[in-house]
Amino acid sequence: MAAVKSINRLLIANRGEIAVRIIRTCQTLGIETVLAASAADLDSVPARMADQVIKIGPPPSLQSYLNVNAVLQAALQTGADAIHPGYGFLSENAALAQACADNNIIFIGPTVAQLNAIGDKLKARENAVAANLPIVPGGSVNTPQEAEPLAAEIGYPVLIKAVGGGGGRGMQVVHDVADLAKTMTLARAEAENAFNDDRIYLECFVASGRHVEVQVLGDGKQVIHLGTRDCSIQRRYQKLVEEAPAPCLNDDLREEMQSAAVAFAQHLDYEGAGTVEFLVDVERNSFYFLEMNARIQVEHPVTEAITGLDLVAQQIRVAEGRPLGMSQSDIIFNGHAIECRLNAEDCQNDFQPSPGKVTRAQFPAGPGIRIDTHIESGVTVPPYYDSLLGKLIVWGEDRTEAIVRLQHALALCHLEGVESNIVLHQAILATGEFIEGGVDTRFLKQMLDTTPAGELANG
Image (tube, rainbow, N blue to C red):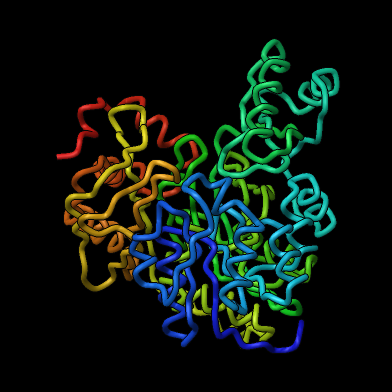
């Protein structure tokens, strides 16, 4: 670890609810905040909350939030000691981390070497093997001629994934050799467009799988875990509902996954907050390493709710060169938490984004209820970015109490002027499968296939 260097002014290279989230922690810590905002976000809620705002470009992400030089120059111009990239955009970008190092600016995240080790999915698989973690059967491929024997060995269906990917982009399922070549071409094109990297690899497609992840914290010497989260309720590989701890998991399997996550992070001498993601094979009661996300996750509040920790504060602490100041035995898990991602999308029209002016935004409050949002009545949701409006997080003494509290809280959410997915969340929580717990990644698609569109209309 480097020598301790206190952060006095922090530039937030992000927008929306995560920008608000970071500002709130900085206010608690007495750190001045500078928001790096595109032209579309200069009058946003986080822009009004930050101590200073600096424009980094026009609305399109490639010219603003994804522009490494623009973000760096904003930090230099405003005299920021550090850059917090949030999630998405440049949060796992090694070029930004290197630019920070070259200019004596603290990057709130792991080292450049660590970002390179896990940002490339093939390198991440190699590191997982080196750390003795089980990985999904598969491997890299360049041509259909290379892919055919590997796919035959793995067994159909197979999953094509982008080496530089994330968020479901560049991922395609292939059910038959006849579709392999054309699907590889499609996946390559999508990967090139999204990540400027057309490399792909094949993995075994686990039909009955759960997406379970483990939150870790490291200071370069010590690594601890903060338990599991279940993120299996997804639509087109995009998470929608997350909960902690992951329900209906065998205790031994949970312990093995947590130990595996720590072992992987220790193998990297990891610094900061990170999430090790696993695919749980329900039928075999086994798990495989998927990837590690070297940043704060959208779903981090559920972990905060059951541990009492502020993960953004922990990120800043480690980035300043301080030790964690806690050991595994200090982590006490309490209760159960569930998060719903509230998106501006039209559930009756293939979930198309619904930008526009929010004429009414009313959120619930009360014991065990938390709202992370950048939305209030009168703000405009721009069409240039993802559709996340905010996150509704509830905590309960147990999962049953959390579900009841969440059902009540959703009923008190009112968003007008844009379409939202509140009704979809209510429908999910009403199913027997969700209430029982432990659904796999097929759950939401199967539910939507049997749900009339009219039942998802906002009332």
